[in-house]
Image (cartoon, rainbow, N blue to C red; front, side, top):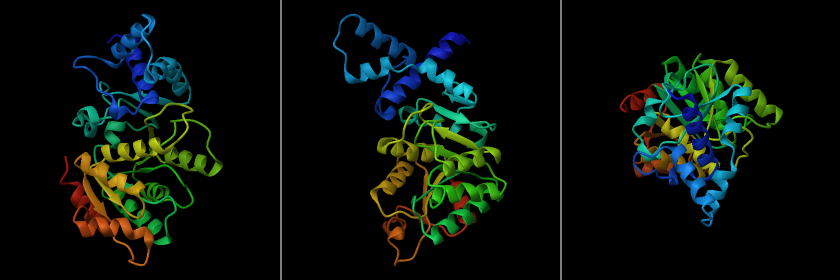
Length: 295
């Protein structure tokens, strides 16, 4: 392997991800990310008027991000790496250009048999209990559980990750911000707990990148892409419809935990079940059985 070219390829993929919506990028057949960025630089050097994308890509220092990530214990995994998850191999142009990872486990191993759990950042007691109970059961059945690493006090994601750790599983927390950066003390404690329990932190974005609406969507897409099934627990806004659409787009099993008809938080899961888009699940065994139908 040409290590210099390998590093250039990683740096190019980082710059393209930071500067544009990765799913909107389409490489010409046989063209690497490094070649694409080099072509942009050649055009810029010839006096061609730069687009906003050109300016953003060429202005982002992917090599510096690699160095900063390495110092913080993070690595950038790309499709040519042995650690690249098999779950992403069949997605073609829909797959992320690369993923930042922190933690000792190999991403490919951790996601070989994985379920994503999604839901409200301001969940009810019922939702948090269900998330913890189901993820603990899934961990005991040998499944990795993937969730948003956010809202440590009240979110479905945080409850899910705690439950997975309690079941001696491998919690995988997906970030909408950069793989490292400033965090409030409660969030930092949650991230540290994931790593100390043998889990992984994953992000599409490099050190110091702030979160944002589009990055929240990208996080949800990454959760679905890395899993065999997506289970929605609570959510009553279009934000969580994104999780359902990601599961359908990637051909993942779409599951939903039914909730009280008196709770707005249960509107979306109940509606997905009514429409026949999602299968109702009430136990870890139910979820595992549906996840087993996906490769």
